[in-house]
Length: 202
Image: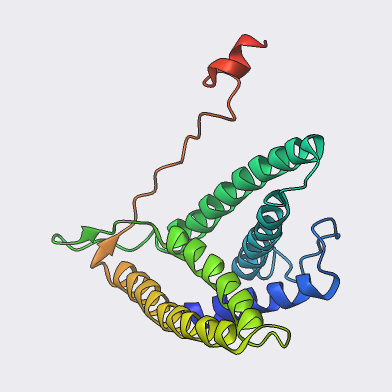
């Protein structure tokens, strides 16, 4: 199943990040894009998500220096754009993979593309990792650990359900029961021509 591979890579990424555990660490992708394109994309996608997760922790520090906060906000904006780009790259992979499949006459479209489901799965891997940290944190109270364990159980169930849904969608596309139609996000706030504030600075 596709998601078995994806979840394994996501766990690999998150564990690798937390060895050094800093947003400024160098990124290296162990999967060569020429030989392992899908794995390369999944690894990069989850790395972006993992760094951004920790950006979001840092910027919520009530004592953060305003100048540092503005710099970090710019980094989060750039990360969001990278995240969207990676989703579109992953969808492009699946479009190419299934390009010769002829949809059945009664084929339907899904509410989201495969890669946006994968995006949710990557974020879910981060939630599970950090909720497990809280559920097993030795300096936390028993009630805190118990509460977090209950949340962790829900997240683990959610991962099973989401993984099943993604695998089913990919199988349906392969069988011609569903078809892919991908719309580019066309974000406006990063575009010099579409954002009126940026346009006024030109």
